[in-house]
Image (tube, rainbow, N blue to C red; front, top):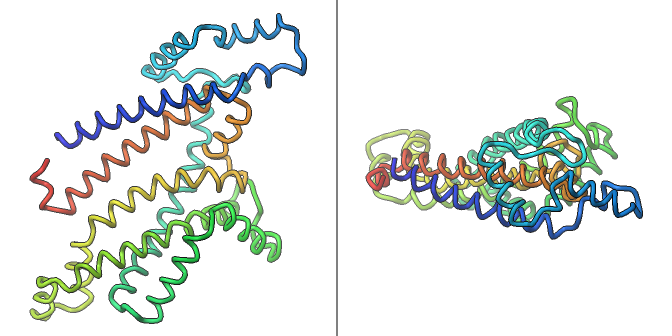
Length: 305
């Protein structure tokens, strides 16, 4: 339990720092009143709207009000839509979790078996193919890969829609983009982790006792190589959420990444701040879950709790 408390306290500190930095940075981007009002508005209209949005108050008063409201779960209302921030983010968060979830499962199902195969048969054609494809996909930016997939599968082959949502076909290209980006690092780490364990004495002892090779790899080797794999898997969730910003923008996927970009362009401060709160909480939860899974997978670390 000490570990959870320590991780929770560190997470709260990180959330406060991130929220404070976001509060300052979004206000440096400009005045939203200039976007909300028509061109060359009268000063009376500017003053009236600033007072309505609370932007005429001193910055420290806005900051204290923002933090106290965030503590109660009230993140305000959108400047442009008028709806509550929680309602708007709730509509978009499900789409992002669906996209990241599909990409995460696909990445794990492809990368881990591929990494195991490459470790068991080092130097084979499959191993060399993994090394080459890992370098290729690690070198391609997400937005460029997304455009390549759109160009081939949507525009040239006409198999899939280019953007939007509504059917499973709309999910294929953005999920494939995130999956292809995340597979190389996970596959290579799985390979290197298993290669470190394979020569160890207890693995050789398992073979000497007559244990079938498949059981040796899956029960002995993989189990003792799990810690770095679990760490990268949990970190990969954060990477997928971050990568979703670019992918959702390219495919006009209505998730929180696309919402954040649009809100930044419109200087919709409450939405940006609300997204940061949600994403920060998700990252803190991921960190705690990662710590617990590592300790469950490694008996040596349980005593440190």
